[in-house]
Amino acid sequence: MASLDPLNALLTLVFVVGFFRQARWRWWLGVLTLTVSMYAALVFDYATIAAGAWTPASLPAYLTINLVFLPVVWLFGWVCVRGARGELR
Image (cartoon, rainbow, N blue to C red; front, side, top):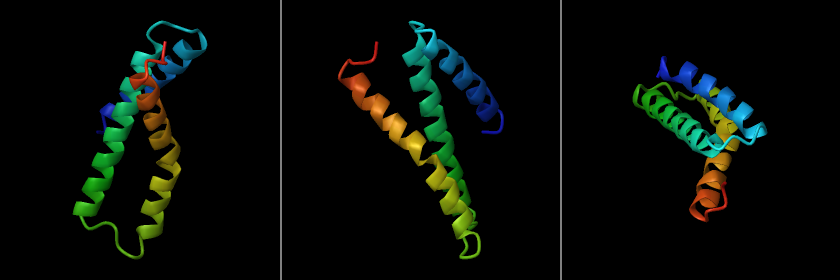
């Protein structure tokens, strides 16, 4: 994940540029970067829970990380629904 996250961040910036320039590939890259972000978040949560890191003392920190990530989860769902309806062009 340590090598995938910086690459995903770079691809996300490329997506933003493509989005504002109305590039034909913008939604393909956007779905890819959102999928990688969701995967990274799930792996992070699973690994920290499995390692026993979610102790009562550290629970607020981990919950804050997940709370801040909620807009990405919403955006992922929004893109999936719009894509399934064929509305992303």
